[in-house]
Image (cartoon, rainbow, N blue to C red; front, side, top):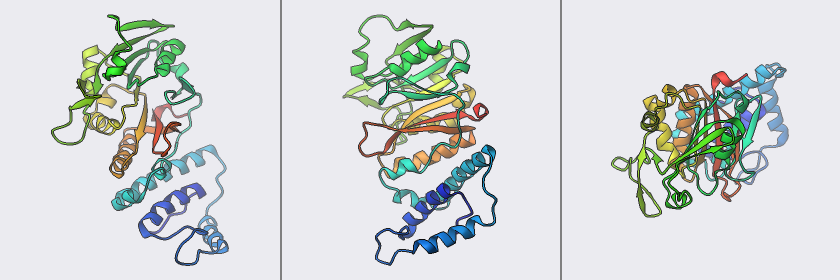
Length: 310
């Protein structure tokens, strides 16, 4: 496969895919054959760059970043078997931010649990935030309510989370905003036929509804921010929400999701979701690896609707 002219970082990413499939090595790495001399590598790069003018504007750099994402997606489409050759932590490095937010804020603790939000000061009054997956930390949720006056709807049917909401109350004032809790999961929870709605956590069968059904039950025609940390369930949920048009119908502005790329199959689903999100107008503006994940396969990805890009 011929590699088109791209910027240095872009070429390295594209070359990685090709190297995975071809079994060849990068210059200077151990291999059965002698490594390519760096002088030869420099000459090949010069030939690629010589005909193009240097990038001198933010617009040109932004275009390069978007073109590189398109190129990666196209290469994985043309070479599906390449997906299985991207192993472990390398999966998290394949795709990076392609857009810049003029005022991004990390909301929540400085650890696993905090999330990046774009232009939170421009959110509408009483912006609606759906937060799926609380785990042991709700600092993002309290921050969005308290700092920015959002109406945060927190969903997590896990028995250990339910135990931390022992009283009869289901909604609380938090600064200028509110936090409401429901012991409910989001689905479908699996792409396996017959198991789409079988949600079992800590041995307990838990209820789950689709994004559209939850919004309908709450009387919401708009959801400003959709946040998910649901331990691998994000693939089926996002695939269904995009295919059904729920995300578009609800006018979701930002999608903040931790992807768990534990397996090759999950990485393939992730690539398909990046492609579908791009087609729906969502660009990745931030990525942050989970500090508690020693394997480097879990990371937070923050997407924003295209018209939020300056």
